[in-house]
Length: 152
Image: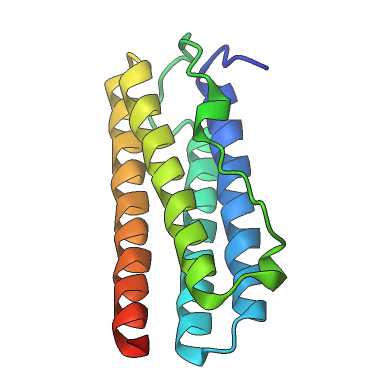
C-alpha cells in the first residue's frame, strides 16, 4: 500500500475519494424509485462535487500558503468500505445503510487526517470536512429510521 509522503498525496487521495462519492451517489440516484431519495442522492453528489472542487482549489492555489509537510501512514485500507453488492441490486434500505457506512468511513478518514498533519490549517480543513461527512451520515441514518417507521 502506498503511504502518504506529503500533503499533496493526501489531497490527491481525498480528491479521488470525493469523486468516488460523486459517482456512488449519482449511481444510486439513477437506481432508486423513490423520487425524494433520488433528489437527496443527487444533492449529496453535488455536495461531494463541491468538496472535490474545494480540495482541487486548495491543491492548485496553495490556499494556505504552506510548504508540504510529511505525514504518517494512516492505513488507508481501514477507511475503505467494501461494496458486496452491485448498487443496482440494492434495496432502498440497503442503499441507505451503505451510504451511511461510506459517510462514516469518510468521516473517520478526514478525522484521522486532521490529527496526522502538523499544519494547523490543513488540520482544520480536514476536521471541517469530517464534520460535513458526519452530517451526511446522520441524514442517511435519519432517512433509514423514517423509512423503517413508515414500513412498519
